[in-house]
Structures are given as C-alpha cells and as structure tokens.
Image (cartoon, rainbow, N blue to C red):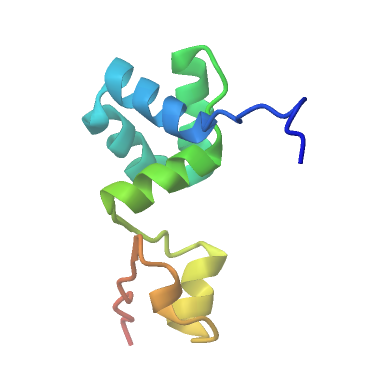
Length: 104
C-alpha cells in the first residue's frame, strides 16, 4: 500500500497542555479549572494565552493530573447525582459531591 499523501498528525492537545503548564504553571491552571470548570476556564485561558484553548484540553489535564473539584449544587449534574440519584457519582471522577444540609 502506498502511503503517499499521508502525514503524521500532531497531537495538539498534548502540545497545548505543555504550553499551558510551561507558560502559566500548574497552580494557575488548576485554580481556574477548580473555580470555573472545564468550559469557562478554557475560555479564560484562551484569552490569557492569546490562542485557543479547548475545553477538552482542560478535561485531558484534569484526567492525567487527577484533579478534583467540588460540584456546584445548582448544576444539572449535581441534581442528577445527589438529588434524583439517576446518575452514578462514579461517572464523574473529577467531581466531589457534598450533600447540602437541609434545615427542617
């Protein structure tokens, strides 16, 4: 088989993770991810880096670095896992679910 015309694809998520960590440091990246989540932190980092940072780059980093953050009680994920119990918490390994204390 002739491989003419095929080229090796660059792993852009890997190179972006390396650029993020090198330029801003892991502390800054994890701080934004913890505070804002995957999508908003990627948006803010895109502005700071002056190049597009994919939300999935943030997901990749959180998976390989085993980052964890508290789940927002107003999010649909929280409602599905804690309140309705329709989604298993194990599906969201990066989130910490804390049940709210109900004052009766």
